[in-house]
Length: 116
Length: 111
Image 1: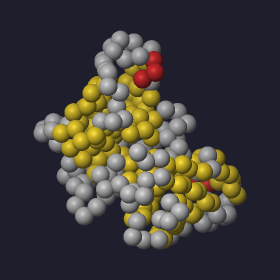
Image 2 (image 1 turned 90 degrees about the horizontal axis):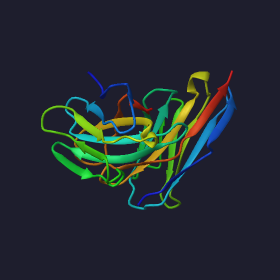
Image 3 (image 1 turned 180 degrees about the horizontal axis):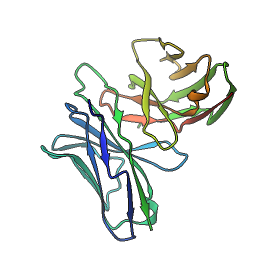
């Protein structure tokens, strides 16, 4: 039973380039969440998506950042024109349908983004 | 929005002792409180969770308590072992499953 799969594990970009991070949720999970983590810090919520819909993007910068979770394929977090401050670990998590209440979120191994 | 505070930021205990990590939250609508363990360079892993209709939950050496009136919840680890060394995060969530994480506690268990 595969867990949340993120790729790539490490991504190096130069300033001004685009970074594209991919996340495949646990099979059967329809809710995806993206978090950002700086060294020695906690997890900061960025965006919450269901299939083909953005539910909450209140933690995501309005400029340069976008996210999608298409009907087919993985969820994508896209960062355009990257800057040094974008360097961080980006974690994706998924959960099943909420059903009768909140559900645990299962995390992937993260993508460590480094900006040169 | 919700604000979760976590204390202490670092905790050092001797192997075999107990460790307690405390969190407070601000939003009375929060009703789900998971705890995650993150080892260096690895993914956060759920270790225990509690819902607002329960005051305490235990799983072997790990227990979580919740005080809804005071809006705080705590993680208790008994008989600590070196492999318990990691960063622990608490979180609070409302009905929309949006998680607000604490800033983390770095636990060091000395052999």
